Image (tube, rainbow, N blue to C red; front, top):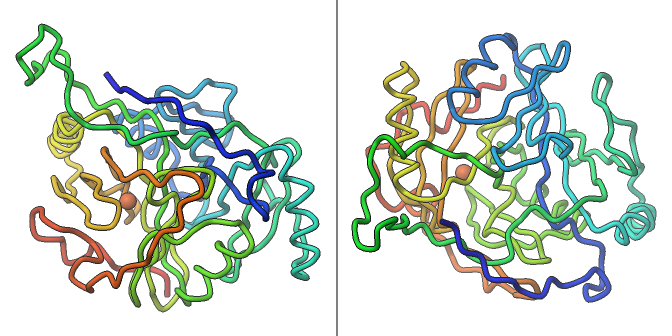
Length: 318
Ligand SMILES: [Fe+2]
């Protein structure tokens, strides 16, 4: 079982600037929604068909909660990102955008905006929605030690071990300008930088969050790399990745990241992208000023694991 200790959550008033607290979701256009429905259901997500689109949720999200991913039909591309903020921060965000001279935009065509949300384009042109919401990022580190139901046997059996991707953790995108994107999400969305070098950048919510709710890799163009769901422990990562492999979906794992410390297994989706199981990611408490270390290039992606597939970090964008 997951144990979380309650922490005092910093309220917006304690920060001098408006700051998103969570990555609520994202939108992706994909060329074949029927295939997507089968793939993401097999991965373990709650997939709801809604007319000509899919709504994906982690297994513990209420059906009324904003989807972790909205998938529409079309050539593959990221349609938008959705960040959650405290209700009190929405008017502060409006004033903040005005002060920065950033124009608000309408939701992209075909995307239903969340109630009370505001939209702005990031420097790569990605539509960013900021919506009033409950905080979905955790309040403490979730350790990944499997439970021992009878007290001392720690390895569960196959019969009871299923991947349970219960919560969207983060997404990782390619950007045409790493420094510019990092600056935008720090200055406009109020995120904090957790790690980085000239190749990658990781950002967290400053009301207390996972080590990263958003990551970027420097590339020649913007692009969508992966989104990632938390599971309870390493057994669920291993069993989940293995089951997807047996269904014909190869991947990359089991391994451990340096930036964020999380364990991972990436599964290749049918559309030339990736989705990740993770657990045991570093937690950055509210109010923490993270001293940026000089992340060595060889630590940008992982500490250990099988050799990284040659096409893992390939941005298909022209
Ligand atoms: Fe990831």
